[in-house]
Each structure stands twice: as C-alpha cells, then as structure tokens.
Length: 126
Image 1 (tube, rainbow, N blue to C red):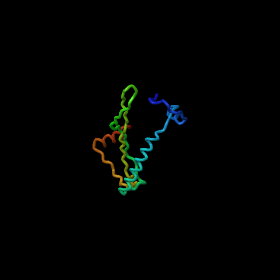
Image 2 (image 1 turned 60 degrees about the vertical axis):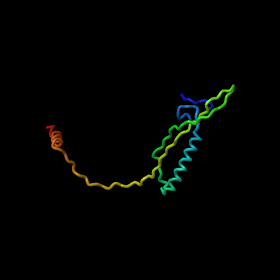
Image 3 (image 1 turned 90 degrees about the vertical axis):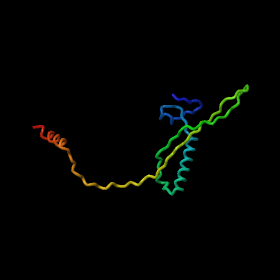
Image 4 (image 1 turned 30 degrees about the horizontal axis):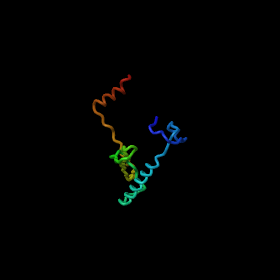
C-alpha cells in the first residue's frame, strides 16, 4: 500500500520492492549533489584532502512551512503551502590505517578463588 499512486508510471525496476509503479527522486538528488559539490569546495578552501572525505552524518528534518494563498471560484481562498526542509551533512577526512604494534603477551593473573576453581576443574575427574 502506498499513499501517492496517482499518475505514476509503471516500471520493471519497481519489482525489487514488490511494486509495479515506481519513480526516481530527480529533484532531491540534484539538490543533494549540489550540497556535495559545495561541501567539496569548502573542504578545498580549508586545505583538506577531498579524495579522502567520507560522509559521517546526514539528516533531513522538516522546516517551517511557507504560507501563500490561492484564489478559487466564487470568491473563496485556499491555503497554498510549501514544505521545505533542512539538510544537515557532516564530512570527515578518512584517517590513514596505522598498523598496531605487536605487544608482549603477559601471563594472566588469577585471584586465589579463580585458581582454586581451575584446580577443581583439572583434578575433579579422578
């Protein structure tokens, strides 16, 4: 069940989601690509390596709606709202992988109680 199914064309790519109707978010994708380009230019300005940037956080939240009016027949007026949003995106420079140095293996220390339990397990099957 989907809410908005009117005037949506059918496509075989929607079978992946067990639907017959499907469409692509062209306008939203354009805006997100513009944001990514802007973030890349900001990173260049801050002398960051743009090849190692990764998106660590992205969030879209609702913004305050804009109110306008549309005039209808017989002197009536209806609301004509738009639904903007805030897009929050954090990019970080990926750190280079550093190999961990080999540590000396230390003997495990046991308390008296733990060592007594270990002795019981070892010598219990006589």
